[in-house]
Length: 68
Image 1 (cartoon, rainbow, N blue to C red):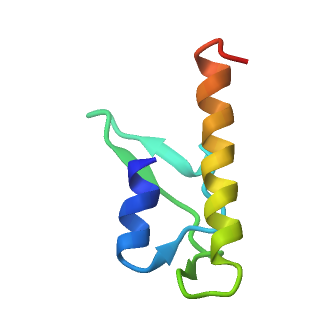
Image 2: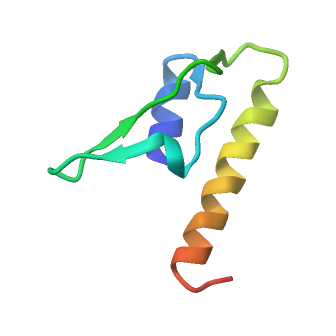
């Protein structure tokens, strides 16, 4: 989730932030890919994209930790 907030601080929303667009290096560092749908935080649909990202990752977290 930290990466979503960091993008937003720079005025960006990934637009398609999901588990398939996050690669992990050998040093356990995340690498974010697939930016064609990136939009500005001032875009009229920005809030919808941010909510989608948070809900999507919350569900992944819940599933991976036996909470759902």
